[in-house]
Image (tube, rainbow, N blue to C red; front, side):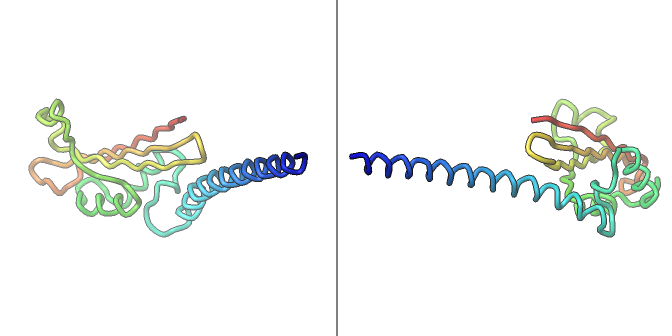
Length: 146
């Protein structure tokens, strides 16, 4: 009887240890995957959001590479290569307003560690006369705590 209880207790302890190990490995992989991509993108050639600490630095880099009058399509292609999802305003409330007709937005969302994430939003305005020409670029950076 005593041996049976010891065996059951040992099995329960082993099951708890397995669950704890699985949880630890899951958290470890999540954290290191998010951290590694951020670290490696800092050294890659081209535009990557991880290279910049503040939105102003990233905005200046984009304006240097794609000054006013440059191709919107090329800029969007670079932002999508960096991981952004780009599109136009699809909310019907804003879609018909004139200030949103010539606007493309690109969102980049990156998880950093377990309870913290960063979101970059790029707003690209183009001229209505020449729809493929950039008229302004604005970057915003948001921090989210989960």
